[in-house]
Amino acid sequence: MLNFSKTQIFGVAAFLAVVFVGVPLFIAATGRSDFYFTLTSVALLAIASAGVWLTFYIGRINIGQGAFALVGAYVSAILVVKAGWSFWISLPAAGLFAALIAVLIGLPILRLRGVYFAMITLVLTQVATLTALALPITNGAKGITNIPLPGAISIFGIPLVPDFSTLENSRMAFYFTATILMVITYAALYRLVNSRLGHLCRSMQQNEELASSIGVNITYIRILIFAISSFFGGLGGAMFGSISQSVYPATFVVKDSVDFMLNCFLGGLGYVFGPMLGTLVLYFGWDLLFEFGKYQMLIYATLLILIIRFLPNGLLSVRFGKGGGK
Amino acid sequence: MTALIQVKDVTKKYGGLIANNAISFDVAENEILSVIGPNGAGKSTLFKMIASFTPTTSGEVTYQGERISNLKPHIVARKGVVRTFQETTIFKSMTVRESVVVAQHLRAKASLAGYFWGSKTAKDDVTAFEKYADELLDFLGMSEISNEQASNLPQGSLRALGIAIGLATDPKVLLLDEPFAGMNHDETMNMVNLVRSVRDERGVTVMLVEHDMPAVMNISDRIVVLNFGEKIAEGTPSEIQNNEKVIEAYLGSVDDEIGM
Image 1: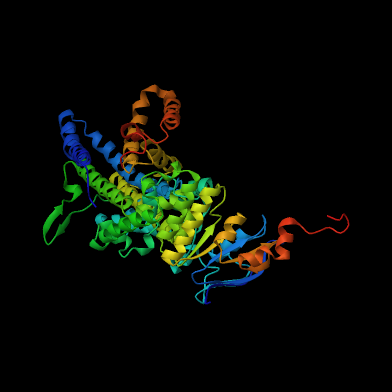
Image 2: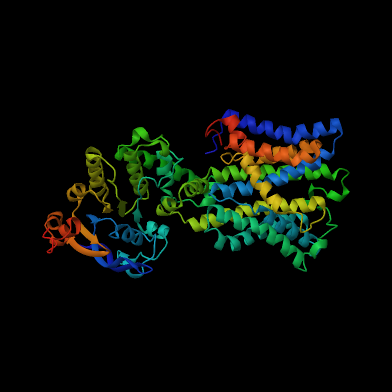
């Protein structure tokens, strides 16, 4: 069922070319290697936003992704620093741990809908921050610092990934790691949405009662989706901690959770690739408005309100029109 | 007559309000049974309990001897007892065909992971679902609107879509919630014929809750009458039409004092 149209194949190829060839060439030409860090952040935030988008897909407004990103960042940091694990193993472990937490929290709260679910998830980020401050293993407000850079991976003696600390340009290495991870995340998301699970999610989003009457185990699907969503959050958070080589309770705060949600709104809830575009626009939009000084927040907020008012289906709706492409 | 569904002493209380009081009756295989009664008689509550959309306070409902009350709706659906809803309960932004395809998910042979990776079983499933969807829509006379988005459909087609979604799950028993409400005479007659063909040609036992008396008298093999949460009568349409209690419930009793 992988019948892609020519436009789709062309679009994906162009996107990959820009990300993996265009951007490095541009940075090499202009010498703006700080762009690597910015774009890496965008890629990681886009991964976490993909998770939020997925919870929207079952009709739940999730403002708690910051909590799972924080969990992921801490799990990876603790495994690497205290248990001496390789970062590459701690990365999926962080995602899985975040997913496990999501199952435990999701069991009671996923029964709620609309604003009630949104409010509870909003609190989650705060709870995660406070928990990180209180627990001995997370080292309180001092956080975990001096996290070593990711080590080498080799299979049967063939080196696949070099040790990041030996690289001259670890920013570029992180950029490629993060973007590859992002591409895999969105490919998986696209596949999920277009497979049976995605169709069941759509049926639940539109009418949970009817969905259960045709035999859909809505509790199971909700938990599964929330777990996958939080897996993405944990993954993004873990990678983020590794790049900044430190994790603090304030690494992800409520504002980040709100941003993850806004990324989805801005890009378009009807489009799998919406949150990716939303993250890019929101991240750069904020930076571009920096020169307005104290009016930065005012202009930013006004623009957001206008966009959501006039483009309720997100930025991608301009390109695809009503209900188009996915 | 073998009982397919048995409703045994089913009671539902909401606080002090008794919505259903010790209701008992059987539904035979391959029959069309209607539950009627004035507004607030407890018909909808009874329906919800049969499909496990709400738990019973006491009593139980069995299907082929197995209890189906106080479970989860999807489990009851898996056993083959499927309810439909009134017209507003649809998958609004899916087309008719998409709705019918998604409703067949109980028939899926491949796992969710199989679908994700695109296994051969999953591909066969999708082909089979689409084929059956077309067949079913053809049977229901809905082929022409199969690519319409559900939210654009007129009321009559929405009812039919509800039945199509229910039938797509391949049920043994279909519970229809007011399938004729808000329809004119011709639409009602079409729907009566449709429901009858569902039973005759697909061997589905049908239970329905309905207000429309002429349609109920026309379509039903048997009728159960509720009033204020109590079962007041059960029988064939002609028995019900001549039942004093039923006439009283619908038209009111003669008040001796004022002589009316």
